[in-house]
Image: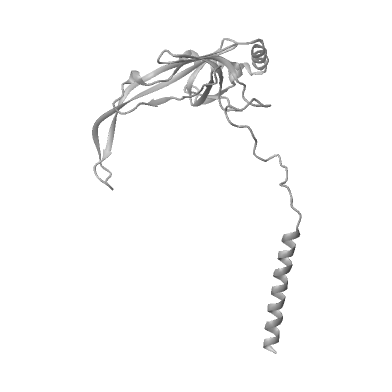
Length: 226
């Protein structure tokens, strides 16, 4: 009796496995469901503009070396410049469409010592005798309507010339050079000037009228103190 039951169980298992294979073999294919949460395409920084994306503006980038680059300029898509206002202890988001010019100013320049651990597993650090340059920056944003906002910011800057050559720079509050390098050898953005068109003038005018006046007074007070 026991052997009969075992045989029945084995036979049923084999039949089920064959049925499963047959079902998978003849099952129709399906397509993935469409969802508003599906990842967006064309998010590469050099992709063409789409609705809601940060605009690509024409202008010039002047480097600390004196080099001036002309071309199309933009930052991360759908992301404004987030400027830290030290006096107000808060951030201010600035749309690139409202900016006329960005000026970089050195806040400090110093030499930083290099330290190494005395030995593996030790928490004692010894001065290696080598130093690297460190420069701190503050950026001033001049807006379309003449207002000025100054503070520290961290943001990427992409530039593409008419010939198709592409550059990437980073606006940041601090830059460390290489060991043994001179401070003057550090390359950074000194100034960005955007071309001002009728479209951007109109946009800046419409946005400015919607901003609370009290908030702007606080921003102007902060800018005057810098």
